[in-house]
Length: 248
Image 1 (cartoon, rainbow, N blue to C red):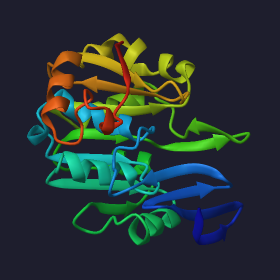
Image 2 (image 1 turned 135 degrees about the vertical axis):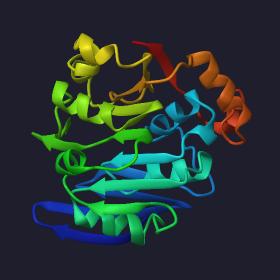
Image 3 (image 1 turned 45 degrees about the vertical axis):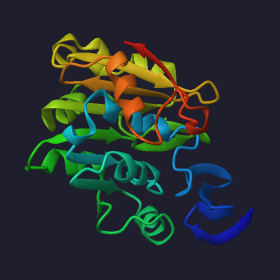
Image 4 (image 1 turned 90 degrees about the vertical axis):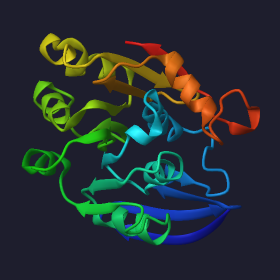
């Protein structure tokens, strides 16, 4: 593994490393982003952010909002397999935007990257709805990853208000406890605004990815759509798209 780039930024130490055709972003030695253009589906956590787009036919996902860009692996996956007309990525850390652009190939064609606080941006947004919203706004507490924005009723209502009538809200939770406390689940007024909800995970990760749908679909429809997409067929071992899904 070769070191491509290093930088101290305040209390943070970043590295971009290469391993074959794969690029990896590390923060204090912890892997934050990984992408390989030759094998975009790598069997890792970032695959789970892509999968919910296929609850609907991919051409239905035209506008995507990504809150928390990181290195941009999710944006690369969406551009590769979903091909939306517009992706907006909101990122608080300007260094992440620099890394996404310089090392992970997030140019203007891939996404419009905005340096802003996600909460402030969402509150002030006055534009057309999104077919898919990815909420991956994370920070750390005592060295452990933790959601930077609590998924309370106010936050969930704001995200729901930005979704199209047939859209999907994708949220990353570091633990099962975080997921259970999400207002999209326990607040009945919010829950009834979604047609269904699912959780996706991989055995090697503690994180759970939740998908809240405003349109009708099912895990069976999801799998059928994945099978039809070249490079994502879960029945083909070389795809490496392994996941567990359960209805919430």
